[in-house]
Length: 121
Image (cartoon, rainbow, N blue to C red; front, side, top):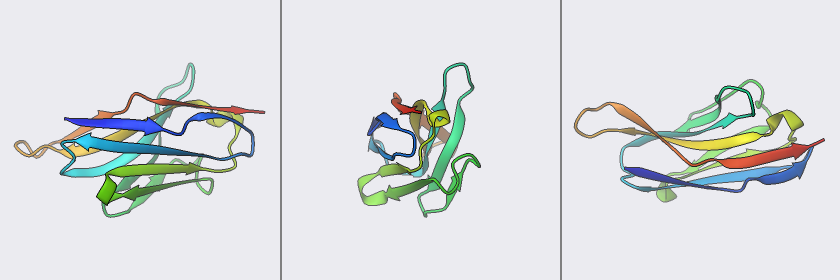
């Protein structure tokens, strides 16, 4: 089992910045990638950004150039630096960890509890 502990959400004005952190604990070996999803009221959950253990990052088009994902493998932590925030970035942000199961070699995704990000206009 992997536990994910998120922090860093809050309320910020448009144009401001926030940094989210997510620390993984428990059975953290074989975590292949970590990422961030978000869900706004009335909308489906969507991928924001993800990063492999080797550092390859992918971003949703809506956040490219504004958000940066990074990881600290030694601390099993992933960060999301969010700059130039817009009201449409308002959502609950969820951390994920993709772990390759030892016996089955299948990838299992773990989810954090979510942290609220609110951007006022």
